[in-house]
Image (cartoon, rainbow, N blue to C red; front, side, top):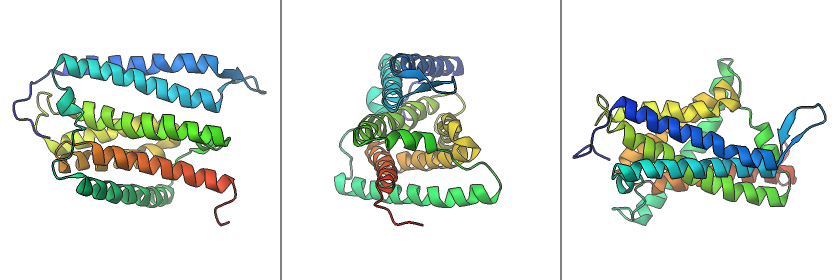
Length: 250
């Protein structure tokens, strides 16, 4: 990922792109929330597991469409969403993905300990994992729509693809690797505020690591996509196995 010959862009144009993507992401979540929404026993609005998965997937699909339109307008699709065959081959790419997967899962454990030690709120994913483990059907639904599509593929295309490409074209940021990596990491962590401050910090660090990996992989996204997919599939699978009683008691 370099800035050689890239078209520069202003901050206003950049913010317009982010706002439109965010707006479409939000709007695309509404139909699923309406179709599968309900009022619970306490009178609060709620959404079913199916609706939550469909909402996440439809939101990401809308965001990806708008991001693609902006990239296409600027002639930057191929560079931002580099999913071509890796220059150094698939073996090295898979190795990088495996190492990244292990590092991320290890960081989740260490990060949770550090967050707890400094007295911050621990990441709260109880509700999400409750949806994931509701039934075999819902487990598969969440794996396909969320772990593989919305998170594994979608978030990498949006954050490490679209966002890093845009930041690398901004006046004052172009070609500055670490500021770009840090900014996209922060922006990646903020939407995870539903997990509490601890979740924002832990996820933000993951985003920084994945941002560095994109530079290390010369802009190719495959190692990042595969690692992200693997982490989410593993975490959801462990949670489902625990519900089924396959995990040893602690």
